Structure formats: C-alpha cells, structure tokens
Image 1 (cartoon, helix red, strand yellow):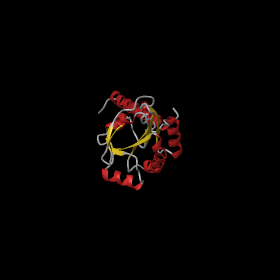
Image 2 (image 1 turned 90 degrees about the horizontal axis):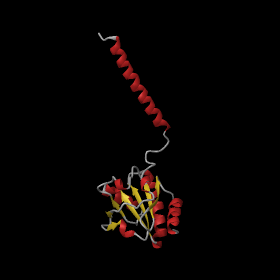
Image 3 (image 1 turned 30 degrees about the vertical axis):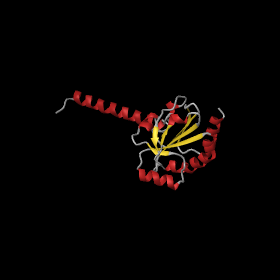
Image 4 (image 1 turned 120 degrees about the vertical axis):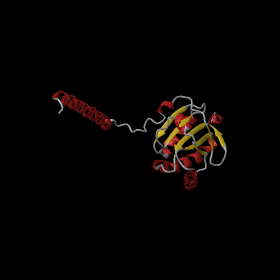
Length: 181
C-alpha cells in the first residue's frame, strides 16, 4: 500500500502537469499570428541570400547576376492551393514588367519534377522557375510556409515580402515602388 505522502506527491505532479498543459493551451488559442506569418521576415532590409538555380528549362540562373534589376522571388509548390490562386497574377505581372528591368524567379519546393512541370504548363508560366532540390534556398530565405514572395531592389537587398497568395494589385504596387527608388 502507498503512503499518504507518496499519493500527495503524485497528485501534486499531476496537478502541475495539468496546469502547465492548460497554460500552454490557453496561450496557443490566444496567439493570433499564423505560423507562417514570420516566413522570411528577418530578411527584409538585408542583402538577399545569393543562390544559383537550374531552371526547368535547363538554364543556370544566379541571383547576384541580376543586380541592377528589380527581382521578384516567389516560393511555391504545385500542391499548394494558395500558390495555384496566385499563379495567373504572377505570370500577368511578369509579362507587364519584364521589359522594364524586372526579373521574376520561381523557386519550387517540396515537389516532384513532373508535378512542377505540369503546374508551369497549366498556368502558362514563362518566367524562370527551378526546383530547390536541396532545400538550401528555402532555408537561407527563412521560408516556413508557402507561397511567399520576396521583392529585391536593384542593389540586391530584400525590400519587402508577402506571405500567402499575392494579388495582382499588391504585386504591381510593390514592383512600381521599387522601380521608382
């Protein structure tokens, strides 16, 4: 048989565990920030991490070689519903600005090549896109959810980012702001 003092110790541990769990649950339900809202936030105002990506067309694209141009870097995947929502706008705005010193780069993550190629074909995407096969680009940009879009100025600094499906209006405004700098 157990002694009353041992039962009290066990009861105390159970009560503490329940209080800790309740506190954690309360904090989690009042925290209104989406888990991906901070995706890449620490990069704004800093030099964009350089990368080289081999596009699905077989060309190598090095970000640092795009200096002097406004660059839009979009992280996406074919299975991502918000990515599918924004895909037509990305292509439309790319076509609108491609002759004005603006470069778009799509970075496909956590996808199969076949699915990524089907996505590009489905949406008629013509700007450079390639897979982040190692996950290194995604990590370097602090991406914790997709879609996320980064806006780089002509000096290669991250000047803005958008988490979630971006609208045509927001894309256009962000690019126009950078072109006026």
